[in-house]
Image (cartoon, rainbow, N blue to C red; front, side, top):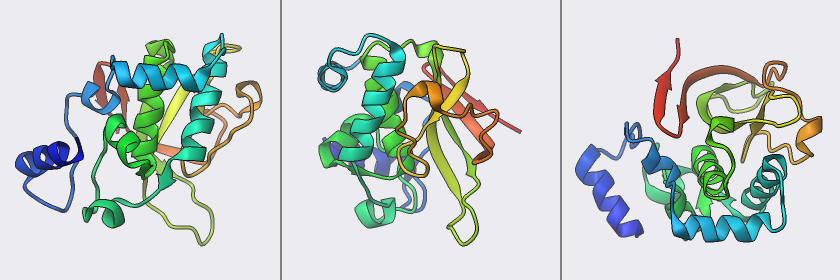
Amino acid sequence: VIDTLQALYESQYKSTDDVRYDPNVNFWFQYPNDILRTKALTIIGDAKTDDEKMERIQEWVVNNIEYTSDKVQWGYEELWQPPMMTLSTMKGDCEDGAFLIMGLALNAGVDPDRLRFYGGYVNAGPGAAEGGHGWVAYKREMDDAWVAVDYSYYPDLRDMDVRKPMAEDMKYVEQWFMMEVSEFITSD
């Protein structure tokens, strides 16, 4: 699978500098997908609500996927991995973990209207590395507020009902684009 995806990337992009921005957003979420569905159902267990499903999926990804930069893993400055590729390697960077969270959530039956993938800028704090970041936003059930479901930068694993809404969370300061199940939306 990895060799096939690598060949696809190389034939499509021709460069080792930057591999991303395929307009077919479902390529990045892999929904529906029987393998991801089976994995997601194992992870969520007896969870009944979308909030519980998202908590369990995020916790599993944070605890099981090793953060590894694209440069170290693939030799590319930026390479977006679809969920199956991340599951195959059990490694990835911020957007890889976020795509995996999205793919697992969708295949677990979380309402697609409650999910978004964001690419943007986070407030890293003094002395921290700056740059782009990818994360999932989830519209929680209790109040329909969007909360971050982050794999790598700020992985808040508390219950959904105590998480700060993104509208108040000053760590997520700028969104360059967002992806929903069927749409890629750029932002000014």
